[in-house]
Length: 174
Length: 111
Image 1 (cartoon, rainbow over the protein chains, first blue to last red):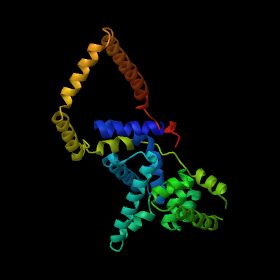
Image 2: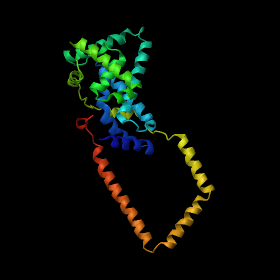
Image 3: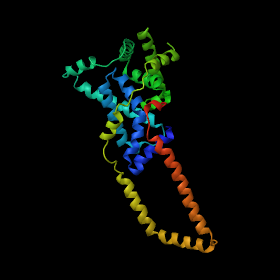
Image 4: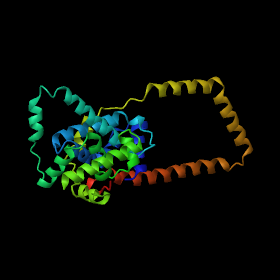
């Protein structure tokens, strides 16, 4: 399904109010969006699914604001990025009182290998901008320009996040 | 660590996540209807009122009748059937393209 197909489904939803036309978009992008959250949450699959669902619902509600200037995936990642950092901000507010949450975070029953645990541990040590930039560019295959649009930062800043994140990851994974 | 090495390392850990009912659950949670913005209706009403206010309808009818009077007798049936044919061809290709793509599996998606 190409970008033109994405646009066709978007138009069917926005112009004709055809809710079912959103289904192919969810099916197409559920994997990259859930993977993006899974990596940002260090493998917490239930949290990443909740955040993914919130992303798709927000995208559906804001679909008429999608102008097609950037690709649909870039626009969707932008929403996902906002959803994640909104949840981080909200969690920070109740961090002091919710020790259970922290405990749950480190004892999720996810099945991932030791190698993956190493990667998550290394990613966790990066600044959140570096982590997001690395994941968008190297895991999700977005260009630097697309990633800078997702993170709403200048291209030069994005490149510096990638560069510093890469250096840190190289040291941590050696 | 260069670009290529990092890319390879992260690509090794890249996994396709199976849907497992996620899409259906998400679709179920969507609000029933996305309302058309009020501004669209306001401009649609203003446009319609202006159309009638400046005698747009009469002008349209007048020009249509003039055109039909001047045009040869066969032009109307030819124009109507051509339009109908174009519509049918467009509809056929639209249906052919959209119906199979409704059944999408994440395995076939290149992102």
